[in-house]
Image (tube, rainbow, N blue to C red; front, side, top):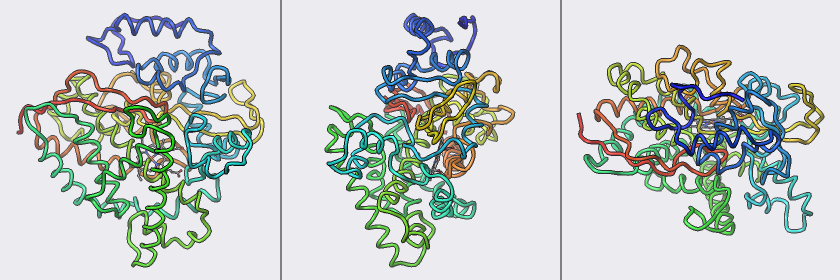
Length: 456
Ligand code: HEM
């Protein structure tokens, strides 16, 4: 068991660098639990941040860890928690297949999959379809993956990004100029969501005035458990919203097919020579990945950057004294925040890895969020250090053939935002603690109250 070291920087947010009694008790409880009971996929432990202690322990004691069905609402799965193992598996597409639902989802949480299998499917068929998930560029192996990725990759090519840059910068400026000064507001809603919705609408060639509809659809798609007070309260509502999104996307593709080719994702799909071979389920899957990929991730990194600079004030001073650090600060935030905690893989035959045999059909979860805190690979990984030597060396974008398609776009958007913030606001003060969202996949914030005291 590892011990608490005075002056250590912990992965959880602490008051004055000290763990609260509650945090200490949580850590002790997790270290005292039988190893086989550890279930890092429990969504609630991402709200109270107890997942950090599970990952800390698993990296040290059981880096290839099995959680049985009896311990997990998500079904049985394997957890990979160390940096080197994550990269090894992420790049071994022969043994570890992407033909699996992207995230560790709850049974019954994806109405589209239930629709796909139909009402007469047996429970075993339903479960198998849920584990498989919607086929999409992210959940396909070669050669199909290359075809689907190739259909849209030009949308985020260096040339497209260079085209977008002035427009994105201008729109960021407009959003920042509209912020209230001297009064509390929710940074997530007024800045992070606005900015990512604006960029998504640009990428999709979607009307800017309807941009928040894209955010809404994306948020619904990632809501595992609808309920009172959530964006959708019932599974039927989620089903309806998913269908609305897919119908709108299908119509847009049909419309773009009749127009001159353009650089947005929908036009690229519409004019792809392979489009005629894509099944409706694949089109839905690709649409979902493009939407979700560009939404929560950048949004939560942007909120995370303001929060991290608040938790590490000396880094804030460093940035303000040297705006040339923006690019490395952005990469460090992407590592520190790790906005997507994991990706899934599946083995199609028994695989021996790390001294264990992973049986055919089992799911393997690559916990990027844990690998990014692996101190055998990174120096002081719990600390937020905006001038690290190799700031782009992190796992947040994954590795191998599925490495994030939008990684340069995400960095661009965050860099432009911070360049524009530094021109305008001498400080952004975080009030209280942000509210974290309850998800084992999207690591982020529901709300974060801030005050901008004055302009420069
Ligand atoms: C900080 C922001 C972002 C993070 C942390 C992130 C993270 C990731 C991760 C972890 C993967 C899977 C990698 C793997 O399985 O090896 C991925 C794939 C993907 N991301 Fe991102 N992403 C971000 C922003 C974006 C943006 C802005 C877009 C916009 C288009 C995007 C689109 C995609 C797509 C399409 C894929 C699937 C790629 C494939 O399977 O070939 N992402 N992303």
